Image 1 (cartoon, one colour):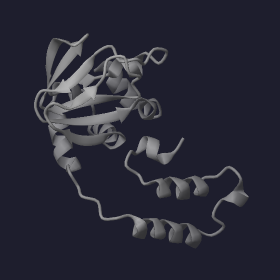
Image 2 (spheres, one colour):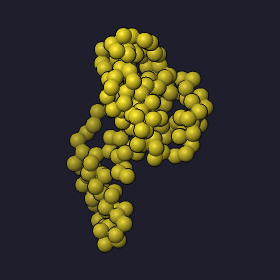
Image 3 (cartoon, rainbow, N blue to C red):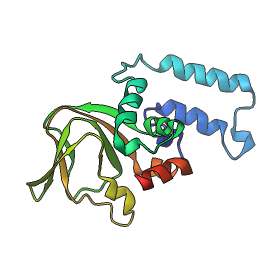
Image 4 (cartoon, rainbow, N blue to C red):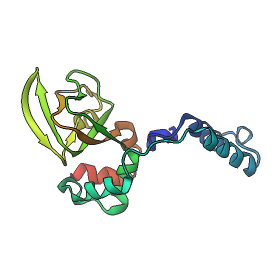
Length: 178
């Protein structure tokens, strides 16, 4: 499994260097620690300065306030945050499309979302709920059963289904209980 599966946002170059460092064949690995270190430094130099849109600490505090995360110990909550990708989506954004295959689910951290089936609104959801989790829970049928559209600007944490399947047992248990 690629490191970026468990830590979204990692550049492709980091995956390449780490996969080489962990290669099964010892001859394919870096032969010296300095070679590994130099490769990581080259990756660091090649990454353009990234704008930080959301501070992890702020997102952690927001998640801690939501009832959904009440039973998550702090280390597990941090794991969930780092496993996913935070994004601010504008009002009117289609977050999910009914009938499409779902490879991830969303945690709504801020804002409101309309849920639609056959283009008819069936619910309005507020912060603290999951969207699209059925695609994770039903591996054999990951097709979306509803659409979700941002009624306001929303802050979401998107977690890839495969990443959660490879997360710690503690995190998986907390999600199952929630």
